[in-house]
Image 1 (cartoon, helix red, strand yellow):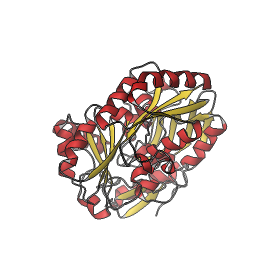
Image 2 (cartoon, rainbow, N blue to C red; image 1 turned 90 degrees about the vertical axis):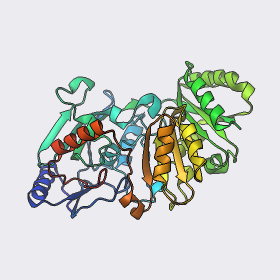
Image 3 (tube, rainbow, N blue to C red; image 1 turned 180 degrees about the horizontal axis):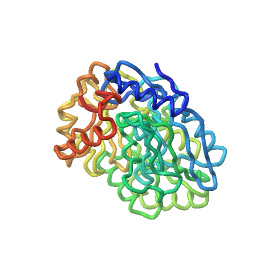
Image 4 (cartoon, helix red, strand yellow; image 1 turned 30 degrees about the vertical axis):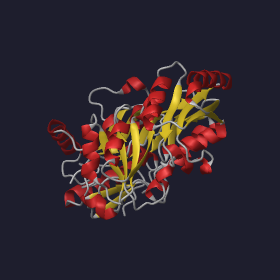
Length: 398
């Protein structure tokens, strides 16, 4: 394993691999093996490219080396009462991995959580990036302010590229103040279709809901140490100043009072609840069972899940106002064809295989297939960044 300690060593390692035609596996903390297993002859680790190089709480901008443990950045933000607003998912429990998530790994998979549907994804908080391309050249794009990108924007493509375009050495992120408090309302006993309607109505109000999820029957019992019980729970999170959170909570409760019981979940339990939703805790057990991440229109996702359940055993819960469905295949098979057909027949969207056995991952199509024009464009972009295809070969495409 090659472990460069600075950008120069990283670039030299890539040039050596290019000259020798050596395919490289790119790794940070090793906690997010999403996609196909990589066909590589050598591994480059970014873990020694570590440290916060610049952080201004006043400007709300942090520049961090790619191998920095995410926990180190979050600790610095906690000290300044700030946060990463996109609340990045921690895949370790879901995937059964160990190690320490890194900032570079977070960006590489565009790790984003429940707040994404109102605050944007990881890529939307990414201001700048430094990386080494497939020719061993150091590339810098973006900066520490939103208007600093000129010419071709290379920042956004790096988020979600899964290490196939370049090896990041440093990233710059915008951060936000942490709210004074939060609370969650849990509406009980709603069917999926009714719950999605409630979430849509809540989001159409001026009450600034920052979390909107639905846990169907039995799934609800797997969070908060079972405190919610097994009945369906439709969840609305409100954040901000304490007085405002209380006022908005009361308005939402009055709006939905006719639908049945509404439970108040206090700040500490609310934070735990949304961490568990973020990290897909309901499906963290039975790791032999595949898990799909399906992104669709909020009005369509539950219909796709219903269609899928007509053909195969599947458990699901919903985030992002219903637009994100986490689906576990209970039969132990990925059922790729059925999953993609259910998505396509119910409005279209993106289905990503997040968890499966190594053998299933090797032969699966883990990411949503692109239409031909987009596939051609993507191929050209990859070839421009990495002409010899030495970065994480096989990870995203065969």
